[in-house]
Image (cartoon, rainbow, N blue to C red; front, side, top):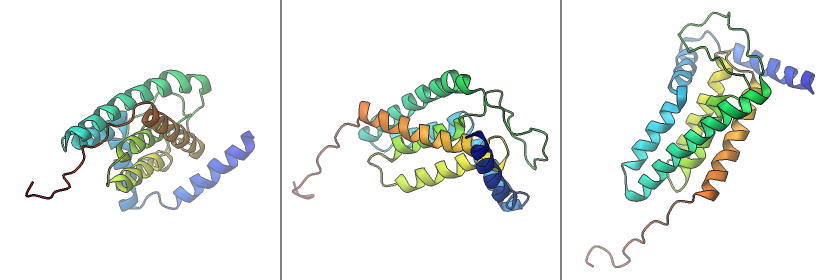
Length: 185
């Protein structure tokens, strides 16, 4: 099983290797890795959603609480169980990134990205954008050589699981019914 995972990781890294070094892809993926640090982009998007309405305020609170729980579970729980080594740090990088100290599996960026995407997308027309951004943030970790592809795949799966569990346990309140009589009352 370890050999199969290593082959998968090597194949994906080879594919990303064809993109590395291009100015546009470097900026996109290094930028995505940096905005994904500590879930900042997800907390910000949750806060922005909360400004739209009271219903969206509930969604924003759920995102904040969900991401906090996700971080504790992943960083203090799951990562300590696996203790997987990260790819070698000594590679040329065109932009500065933070060097993580925790285990490589699962990717915390991928887990928080997909937990947030599931929670933010609930009853929101912007749902495709949340998932697209989550995919870029998650895959950026392979691109910048901070994670193996299998770490990211595991993080995506765990994030989806945690997000859907949070949606079931803490559903959003039902939106108030729109007036059926129109603007005249």
